[in-house]
Length: 149
Image 1 (tube, rainbow, N blue to C red):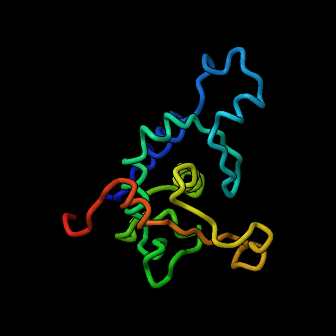
Image 2: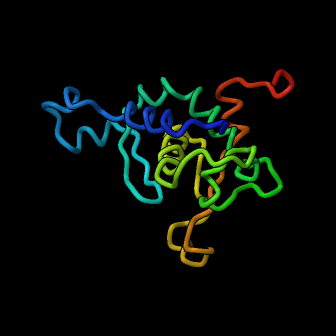
């Protein structure tokens, strides 16, 4: 059984958006100003900051369960996004769209980044970016002690 649940990633992603009720009477610039805006591989996303904070522990656990090569503290210090659909046990947990959603949540929390600018992606295999999961920041933000795990 995979360590990351694709359905749960999708639920968390959707739950972090603004509700239609919250958008009533607000202009687009006003919503953008109040949002955490991230640009993933495929989409721009504006999240409700309070909702992103509410799911941070679950998102952090999922990110730490990715292939260890994604972790900044690993010798690889990042990996091609194409491998983001596998967990640390090399089990397939989802598809590229769902992995992009997990990365979006991680970016919104400041825990995921692309080490190369978008303009450089065409030089990478398949023109697909590398992704870094800032595991030390996740553990610090969530007060995770490796000795306890």
